[in-house]
Length: 585
Image (cartoon, rainbow, N blue to C red; front, side, top):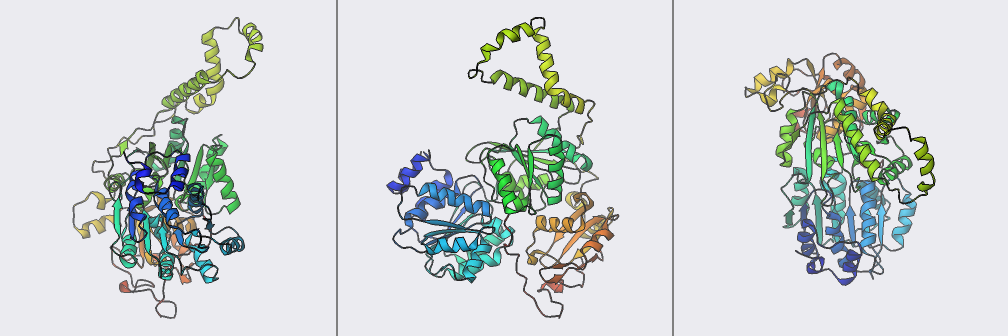
């Protein structure tokens, strides 16, 4: 088996690696480090989160840096504040025995004045989020002219968050670079475009199959009615008493609502979403990392960059519309070679997505029954008894109290003591789950079902599928926002639900294009959505939402311009910049 010594790293770095307890490199480290140590080869590394990518680029980067030169020689760009701080923390450990090598994390939500001061003191490696990096460039507080190495970490995440223009700007301004190192969990066309436009004959290494998931993750899904989703979530948490996990929701409203309900029921849980201040966010993450919290519930945007060891479960309260988002959600568990479970709660109109996910991550998803109330009580009971038996009684003067205890219980049998302990501990569970209903749908998601989307099961013509979609209880709405506006399906869904204050269950199929989007809304709520969204301003544009004319015909409305760029209100062409990082997540 390959060792770090065999990769060509110098003694000071190897000593740090040894101190950290690393013995053998992970597959991405083993394949990437020898290539990156040359310093002159463009590189693309595809590997899932939790596979050791930070060390894969961090160790060779530290070896290539010249400590005598007190200016930025390496730039690491990553999507979020949390990942920025995590990378910087890891680099601090790796450079323990390297003298004169300085790193600086620059990100939104912290004092830019302090960051500028630190940069001027002489920093060789800068770890940055795109928005704050652009701010520093515009203030002329950072000089990229002498940067030799540019690392794009979690490239697919940055593009999903709308940082394409920022990344292009950074790469165009690092004109004297010797190499670009791009690391990503998936390889969508946008990431491939960066490789094609800015890299020269890059060396590409894939650990596992492209766009595949972590083989140590057990993918499970549970089918229930939409109105039973919360009850199913609560039951799954109760059935896994040792769970330490993250629950993902589509919207911040759902995250807050579920967090409040579970907190009132006595669960150690808090929500993480964009409405929190940075101080509140840091407090929540601190509690979660220290395991004071058993559960964290978050939106996709808020949870990006979370890197916490030991997460046992990831729960998809709803499946994401963008299938690649599933890869990033599930990647929060089974890190560093450990195993984990990713649970998805589906209603009858969502289970067809499981087949798509199986193909994308190249893994089998196991359909599991939602446990009954008696199953939950039994699982909780034996978990408690195991803890009781394993309790350490070696520390404490318990023998002092034994005579009194023996006297107190002299007329009580062992069986009765156990019964009383069980009653004291589980009375609330027994009452709550008494006569609990069966939450399972009992449908085979592989079968052709009348409640599945017609286009997912029909081999008919396009016109037949269009007709079926129009005749399924939904009104088809057109909106002049699309991928050009920095949206992908998950972020668009969150936008329209937040603006309309409607629930996900009222939506059907979303068909997103570059310039505009069609969305199905149940007929009872279509007019409310139009009223809430039509006329809103987004990125200096007026949002237009109205009923579509049916099918996939492109309405002749603002922003639909036959596939060209949208026109502004004066009729001229506009350039749509993807949203820049202004608010830390």
